[in-house]
Image (cartoon, rainbow, N blue to C red; front, side):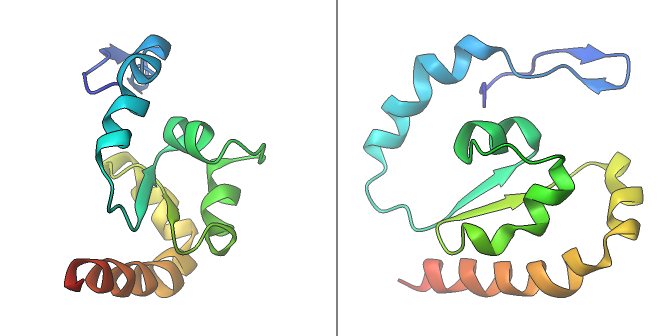
Length: 109
C-alpha cells in the first residue's frame, strides 16, 4: 500500500503510512489498463480496496466469492501466519485452487 517499508513495531511490521497510497495509488492504477485480477494482501490493503467492515481478516478472506473474479482477498504471506493457515484449512482447499486457475487464465490472455 505504501511501496516502502514502514518499519518494525512490537509484533511485526508497522502499518503502511496513510499518505503513501493517496499520493501514488490512483495514478499508478490509472496507467494499468488491462488489469484482470487484483490480489488484495493483508488487512490494510483489504480495507483500502474492499472497504466493507468485516469483523476480521479471516471473515474478509472467507468471503472471497463476494469479490470474485476481479478482487481476491488474501492473508499476508508471513511465517507468522502458519497458525492462521492451520486454523483455516478451507483456504488451501477452496481458495488457493481457484486462485491458481484464475491467475493462469489471466496470464494466458
